[in-house]
Length: 294
Image (cartoon, rainbow, N blue to C red; front, side):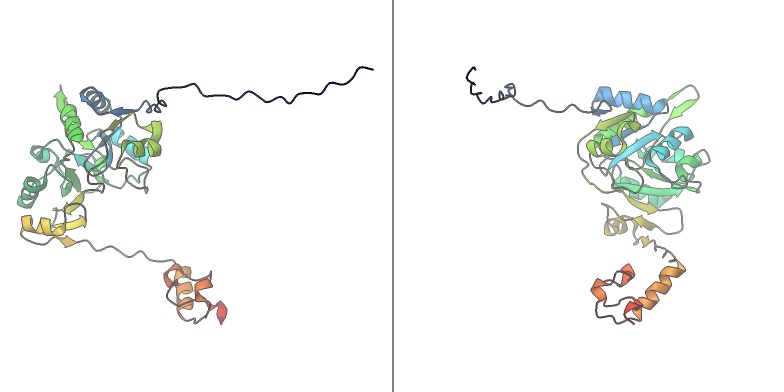
């Protein structure tokens, strides 16, 4: 009988990563490109052909389409999942283009444009007859803005022009994110939210302001501040000579069942109010609880 041999413990060979000078940086997605003369010209060509591109402004990144092309604007709404009756802001290359989009330009609009354009200010004016319903949501007004970001301005200039009877002037651009989500302030935010649905994303760095533009309605007898932004009411008042009125938010009617629950909650003096799971959210922290304790 042959003597048994002791088996030697076999240690698996250790795997070592190949030595490199530095780890390779992840490649950017194909539709995200650094803003340059070449990429801006490419983006302008996509817009003229009816496509959709994302581009930086000083406020947030915008999802742009030819504002005169209803089908292109509808594509923006589809990508965002935005209700069709919501108007979008038309971005212009210069204040001189106001007359092509507005039926009339009041003196107040001219003063605000001179003071704050290019910049984070949107003016609501009576729409011109040729403005498509796609950008106004069917309303008789249109929102107009001249952005200050150099990439946005270069794109608007490259897009602007005419060929035969066709004319390009104005990019309709809401924020480049899904409807209801936080507005993007970097190209990566756009890529994460919208992905390949956008033909091209121009990367122009982080947005300087980081919040949406101030919106002032000048379609009525007196200016109305519809949305606060980087330009405050005091700055607007100094230019307008009067303080803009603030739009009052309409209170949404609550369902009858919710109203009944709230009334019951307010009539209760339960000692375990902080632990009551049936209370209305409006009553939490107020010492009111549901009628379960009665």
